[in-house]
Length: 591
Ligand code: ARG
Image 1 (cartoon, rainbow, N blue to C red):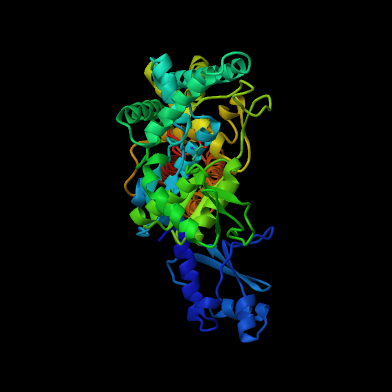
Image 2: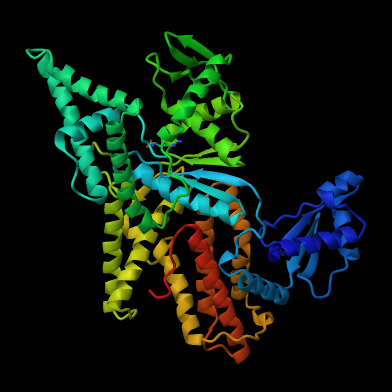
């Protein structure tokens, strides 16, 4: 249990001990009224109502009859109308918060106990033989943070990269590779070449179709047949087709891995859609036999399916008339597999807003077929705009790919840090500059995706992303590095110190921010909202800055105060580091 929870528990115990109310009549809340005193309040309405009494009177009685533990966390008790307000005892509070942080270290903020339940977080999920577009980048970054949050909340997390490796276009791609040869580049450039030859083959098909109308009736037919034949061979597990397809899968995975490594992203499984193909027949049969289905010329159609809120969903297919399956069929099969393999408490999909309807349909059908009782959530996110306010698009030619994005961020971060060094604001070796530029560059890209609600659109605005002031990754990293530098100068930390000395308002405010991390983690996970962590980080960094402006650490008035403040700085650094780690942002010790 963490300090704030212990505080609440002490209050409850003291209240129940009066015999004036029962535990279920107690709902503590944080006083919000302007000028309200106290850290937790008991509104007496519920209890008074249950007893047929007057809330203000009950509040008075409670305050008179409370006995507080002598060395507990409760300081003062005040009545304000129908509320009883409880304030923290500052000395005990400071000691307990610092103790919580020191005891748990890098786990500070996380749940103390495992839930014993599994959560599947599916994110990134790019398509084979293509570069990741901004949607995949957002999914990668947001998904990684949500997976971290669930792991920290005591869940067993399965991080799943659901690759798009299935479909007719793979026939075209194989035909194109046969015709033009395999790409010779590496990394994202190899994928760019794949896109290029795919495009070239498609152009050929299109030109042949146009020419065809005039004089060459066979041209398009031949090319088209070639692609179709490969597609069929792939479906029938022809070894050569499978080999070529597998080669594309490996090439893509290797190329993406370089970016994942830079971002600190890893997965537990990377099954593509095709992995679930053995389940497609069962899914189509089960759905086809249900009363939801209509069959038409071999096609299986789902009509009038209500979604979770009872709204009727638009009609959709789960089998084409040629027997082919659809994206949704494969998603349903995936759910069936996951249920059997992991018995998950929840499956969380991080996919862009354009697929919202797809997931409503997927979830509704999976439920209707009784395939899972897991909580199914689509965390959807908005688009990305460039600094000129244009949505990024391949067609407009302003698309940003991940490798280039990370490269540019690194280059810009490096220039900024070199400038700081040149101005004498910091001293770093060439090696350190490089390492810090990497951490700051990646951090800026990640934070840009996470500092606000994922539903909102984001802008790639380098000046804001890399600003060392304001709500940005470099600012948070810088505040952490600042703590580290104070700790280096003040080393070693005294083993014995008196936290009771930390009663300055800015010290208490900073302690309160630090103490909030556990509940902030819970809230962020529950709401699928990494920005709740970002908000907390920013608030904590500012609280630290206010403390540092008001209180001297290294030159504190007494040696005892200096020792206590150094411990506060140490706890701040740890808490900031933990918060940043939840977003997969690194915390350099020097900047
Ligand atoms: N590969 C898909 C795309 O690029 C995203 C997959 C999302 N996940 C899913 N289970 N459908 O659009």
